[in-house]
Image 1 (cartoon, rainbow, N blue to C red):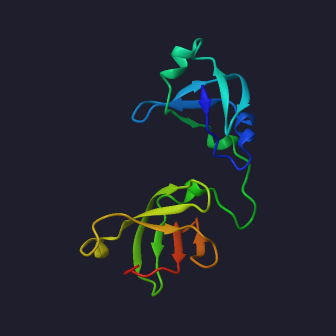
Image 2: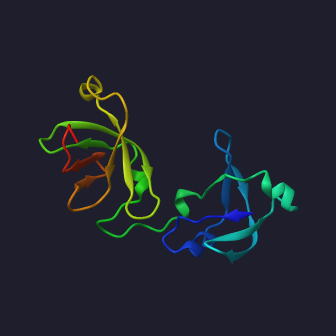
Image 3: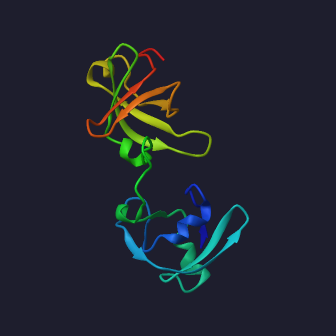
Length: 156
């Protein structure tokens, strides 16, 4: 089965066990990695649930997850991006912009997808994107209060 890893060091994905796998919209299923090897920009892995290449193809596009408890603690001043989901986002003048509904992370810098707050929804119906760049854009993150302060305006 072809695997694309999004861990900071791609091979670190194989340090976690067990894995959980699912196709979108289905239940997570626990799996074990029996063996793996690097292949191009990704990996080829043999999982205990697929004995043949044909069986492995049935999992094409599946998501891989691990238990949260398997992750190491984050260093001071950093966060797991998944912890941002559900945080309220305030902008330049302290105005409530919305709530982080999803994180997109495909390389350069992560992007927060924000669902507009009730007062913004009158003007802006669609979710909008804010780059997660600490310093110039993201000013503060308070996970206890579930709040993110950004250098971002209502009309951006």
